[in-house]
Image (tube, rainbow, N blue to C red; front, side, top):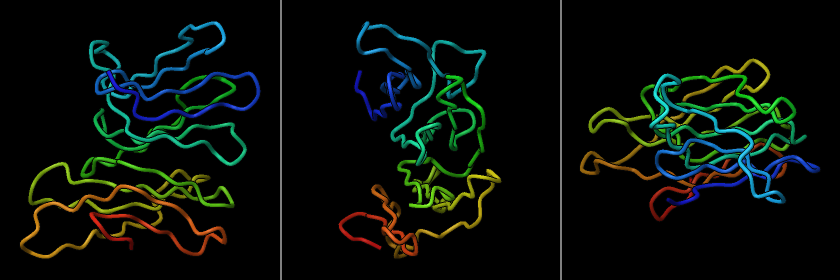
Length: 173
C-alpha cells in the first residue's frame, strides 16, 4: 500500500497520513509507532473500504487538515480538527474526484483541483470559502473536443493570494 500524502500537526501532535487506495486517513504517533485514529472517507458502515485521499494540506494555523477525498462517499473535501482529532465537516462534490488542494495565504480559501468521475461529464475545479464551508466558484476545466481527459494535478496560490496556478497535462494555467 502506498502513502499518498502526509501532513504533520503542530507541536507534538500526530502525523496525518493518506493511506493507500482503501485506507482512508490515519493519525499516527511516529515516536511510539502507533495508530491513534483512522478516518473513514467512505461509508462509515463499511470498515473494509475507508476511501481514498490523494492530497492533504494543513490550515494556516495548523488546527485543521483538509483532505481531498478522491474515492469516498461522497467525493469532496473532509476537514479534520487536529486538537479534537476528528472529522468536523464534509462538503460533497459528487460530480468530481478531488485530486489536489491549496490553502490561500490568508487562510480564507481552499482551491480544489478535480478529475472527471464519468467520461462525458466534465468536472470543474472549485474555490471554497473555508469560514462558510461553501463553494464560492466552480471553474471549468476546458479541453479540446477531441480530448476526453484533462489531468489537473498541482495547485498553488501566488504569495499575494490574487492568482492561482494549476498544472494540467504539460501546461500551467
